[in-house]
Image (cartoon, rainbow, N blue to C red; front, side, top):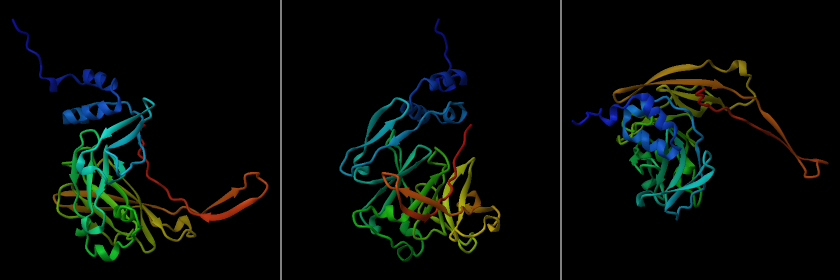
Length: 278
């Protein structure tokens, strides 16, 4: 008589958790990709992330330093991603830009484990793109001169929202869902003299630092934090603006022999949003 077994996707959570805790980061990511409910239901112990090493555009792989295992891992790149520029990571997605000029610039979400490559809308769908994004540097990918920060809301690319800030025009946000045709621009929310800083999604809400251009302003004069509701197709995004006006920081650079000060420079420090998971 044959014994009936429960389907593999109905294994008890405690057994799945026990298996998961014995996996390294690479296998944990593959584990998450197998079945969506595993990713959402499992309680997991945080593991040290990988450090992405400098990428040679002529290379056919990405290199990461695994801080947990203490070794370098090399992951093959698909041909379509080779020669691109990789900038930042959020929720296991690496941001990839291809193209050599603004006219053929394309941006993707790239998963280095599954090698999935999901297109984002062209930046040219942003109104007045050519007029507002003009910074260029010889030998640099154009996205490196345009995009200052990118964040995604979830691991699931079919459900996530992408938020972007820019160098040249730092008073707007751009939002989109992967594989859609255009970016939704958020503007006019900031008080005069303020610009967007660091971004972070938490529990489905988008948090953005609201920084002041005048470093001498009194912190007590900064506007209160604000909440706005942004409509993105059939989805509503809660945007929470967090005001912060850091004071100037004075740095002293000493000579090697510590006998004299070489520089006294007034420079600024900006705050960053950090996700704390306990």
